[in-house]
Image (cartoon, rainbow, N blue to C red):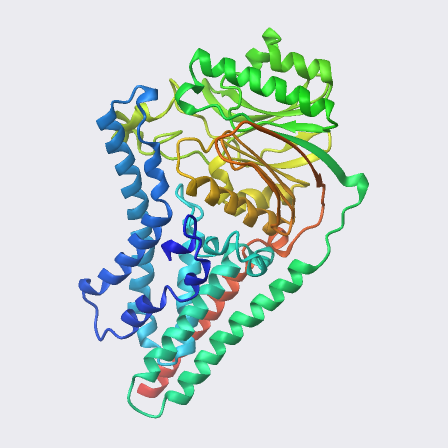
Length: 501
């Protein structure tokens, strides 16, 4: 499962990767702690491999962190993510051992297994650590199945993946048990193949439906990828490079016909109000070119800095500001600060922690409302769904992504592809070092930057006001699965009671 995402991108492995763990759990006669060893190995393999890039935060000597301390922090972050994944897989395994073995019918066990996994992923999405859903393994290479994200978010694709794995696992179990069960095993195999084929065909039909692109909804958006290394970003040299690169890039794109220009997360590593008050170079360029800009910089909230995106019109007026809501644990704020603060407080590049943004923010632009995601927020589908439901017509995704190996920006790009499909919105991505991109509502990438290069690009997106089932009803499939599982569970209890009496 870990090889299904970047950098290996063997997405097809996700459709069989859970089978060994499923067979192991369903063939245990009684619960013992040793039964959790294979599930724990699975969790380490998936979460540990997929998010190994987190160790790229080392070395942090540029932030004043000693080399050894930096290494320990990187290892701690990686192990924390693995532990979080182990908890999720272990809870699912305990549920399978405790509940589903009391169900005799394989299809009932499959439904319970799907419900448990999707339920845990849903709860996981409300936690501070969220990235590697099973649905994520299919992005960006399996676009047909990803179209089903528009129905009920990641639960849709995750449920199909777990169901296919479960059906095949149950077929293998029946095939090796005594008795005349091979016919039913063949039926389960056929059901798994049918589910796989039908869902992909339906997804392909959705993918091939033409997009409406009325010219009155077109926005010519300029993207600047500044390529300012983190090592110098916060010192005078880095600030000069950022101001020069983003100012010249803005002017170039404005003169080339851009309707607006997007810069990456904290492109200008300073307080935006200070830029405006002092009439600095980038702000002066906006006044001269009179083209709106969406600027990544720092804001202020209750005495703390915010990681923000500012919407500035052609007259230099700040129309709105979006403060990052989903901050990175240990990177932008310290959870359980009273316990962990003394060990990792130097991880933040600022003198104080970032303040969380309000989840109900609205980002106003000269072209209507926009959906905003700042870096880590790309992993949270609900963050996008809520903004789409409030009238967001396109997505602006900004990130830094420096200091990691190429698998991290590739995975980040894959997350934004999923969000585009879920909300039926075009995405404009601007990052510091890559990958910047333009993605259409079907998840197709129309342009993607190269890594670690200064680049500018002018592309066209189209505003949309459609609402997918996911935007309208949220994660409704989870409630359908949960209701079905409860009915089956109590039906079995009732049968057991009637047989006893």
